[in-house]
Amino acid sequence: PLRVAVENLGFSYLGTGAPIIDGFSAEFDDSRMNVVIGASGGGKSTLLKLIGGLLVPDRGRIAIHLPGQPTRSAHAGAAAYLSQHPMV
Image (cartoon, rainbow, N blue to C red):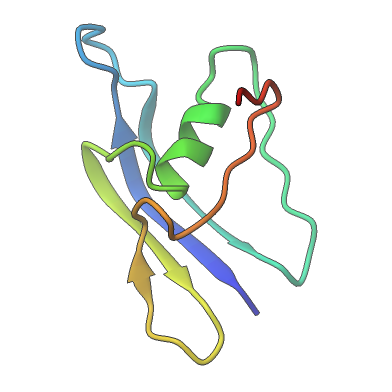
């Protein structure tokens, strides 16, 4: 199955001083439903942008495991992300 592993992830936006994600670890795969829940501003969309390679973490590791292919790190083009408010 497709698997995304996130290990000890940390990220803060420039100029904010405080991390929006700090020490987050999880594993997601396509054999079950995966849900990320939390308060507004809690980092859910930021996490998806990190997995999609649209943002670069300050620390930690994101690995994308595709069946029959070598494991790769998250980078632009490694995964897709569709915002709840898409813009063209």
